[in-house]
Length: 539
Ligand SMILES: Cc1cc2nc3c(=O)[nH]c(=O)nc-3n(C[C@H](O)[C@H](O)[C@H](O)COP(=O)(O)OP(=O)(O)OC[C@H]3O[C@@H](n4cnc5c(N)ncnc54)[C@H](O)[C@@H]3O)c2cc1C
Image 1 (cartoon, rainbow, N blue to C red):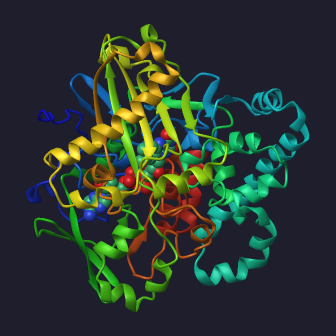
Image 2 (image 1 turned 180 degrees about the horizontal axis):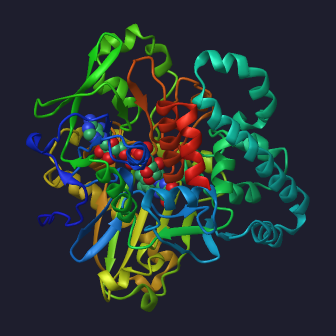
Image 3 (image 1 turned 60 degrees about the vertical axis):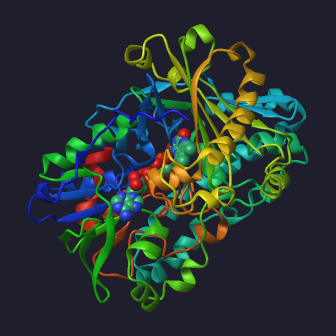
């Protein structure tokens, strides 16, 4: 394999111990959207915040990279709810000072290939409903009941988030109210809820066609996350103009304005503790940064299993709690470059979801048992078609990204090897998987055969290497009903001065992790200051 040239997209400032600038009010581990949101909101209140990112560029899963004249995103394909002045849009506007712009996708934002049938989702609540009824005319009643369930869940999601802010004793007092306002179906199994509405397995498959957005098929996921995602995209999908790296790039100035910084190549080795109190962090180079406010956006697994002292974690009673959660699935990525524009190639601003049939759970089971079995889901996204600025940056070219599940176990024998030098057998295995995934692309868009100029395949080991997820997990913790009911998964920890943020606090997704940043900031500064902050953001 030829040597891979390094990406030139670098945001944040390269860490050196002598670039640390005096005492910080808070240290944030990880520069994903959760960490950056918390850092930016605290900075906005005058805090001096130091963000430490182990990767060579900031942004976590929102980072992009370029190679051979092409540019790809690793963890952002579409974001919902930003077409009008929603809360999500106001948050992005506030964090980016209005610099982040959004481009709408096609009205048909998701297309589902289920076996040999094709269905789709259309932007707009009424359009979404009418389009479903057009595809399933006999199921109009079930579809209306489904839309009603989505509406009911809305209130429950707000209560769910607010609950995370409460201290344990406050939660006890608020319990009667919380129970009343939390619809029972939130934590019920997605498939079971939908099966009560309809016996049409194709309709259930279409309603669950976005299960890959949270990583669990319908018989294993909680209705809450299913509904949250469906609601999130109900008004269509949007793409950050200029690429997903624009998200972090537009937020960082807010942190720097208060004297803070976002350092890259800045791996935190451990969180420093004095008993149950946190006193700062120790960097991989041995440098210690003293600080009595440490915010971890590196994920629950990294924080409790890799960064804190094992004995202290046990002593604080976390061991049985950690056993209740597990990492989400891992994935393969295929990053494709073509020497013609998206327009010339006829690439849509629509995501493709390709399924072998309508029993998604059975397909996952089959695949986990047998790597030769069909991929249970293949997701194809066309970033250059979605980005109105792409042609300016990379004239005459187009890009495509493919995502599909793959367990880390398949790659165990190469774990610990160096990125780019994992050996010929690894490359051959990857090439085989990449070819299988490309076949799905050619099947749906035959005009692309022979037009691919360049492609590369990422594996769960790439996720481990670049994004520091030890199990190659793509969405942090698995989003099953047990995880969602863990009240300890919130901004507060049992260690004084240690806070959590990011996708493990609420849910995955850029918006989920960003809203976790808002929650964490609120928990840190208290009700009075957070009320003023919320007023400023959502005015
Ligand atoms: C393939 C894929 C596709 C996706 N598509 C979408 C999509 O289309 N729309 C959407 O909304 N969401 C999507 N997501 C999910 C979304 O990207 C994530 O849920 C979200 O970005 C997570 O943000 P975060 O802040 O919690 O964590 P992350 O972005 O994972 O950030 C955590 C950061 O911590 C750093 N870190 C870890 N350990 C250390 C350490 N010891 N020292 C220093 N730094 C450390 C990591 O390097 C990482 O940068 C996708 C994710 C993936 C993987």
